[in-house]
Amino acid sequence: MMQGYVNENYEAIISVAVKNGGSFKAIDAVIDTGFTGFLSLPTAIIMEIELQWSYRDRATLGDGSETVFDVYNAEILWNGQLREIEVDAAETEPLLGMGLLKGYRLQVDTIEGGLVTIQTLLNLS
Image (cartoon, rainbow, N blue to C red; front, side, top):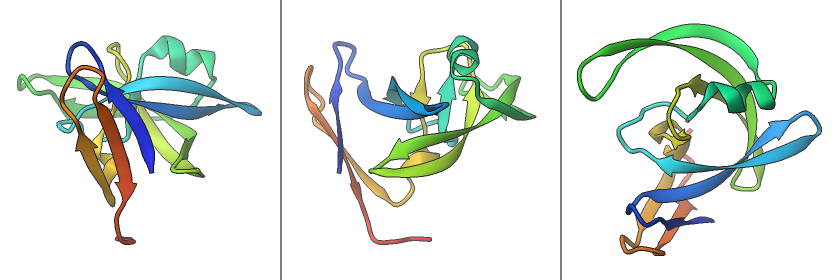
């Protein structure tokens, strides 16, 4: 089980450990249930932890506009295990998407300082 918290803006926050060479960098990310990817990070963080560029992709945003963005490969520590994921470059706060939450239960106590829990469901692979 992983735990996070609800911030003063009532956003569910979870810390994600992204592999940075031989160590890990902890990044607080907002859980975004409208984001179908795994993780988005600003370019400055992507460059700092030296993620490997993979390809360019296109997406339709919530307002209906389209955008083109770079996708990088990363390894994160997720539920105690290393996991390879794709990271989308986006000049916003770090976002954790539904791609990472597949096979998990998300529970949010929606009060400032509330508990965010992510628990493994049955193996859905």
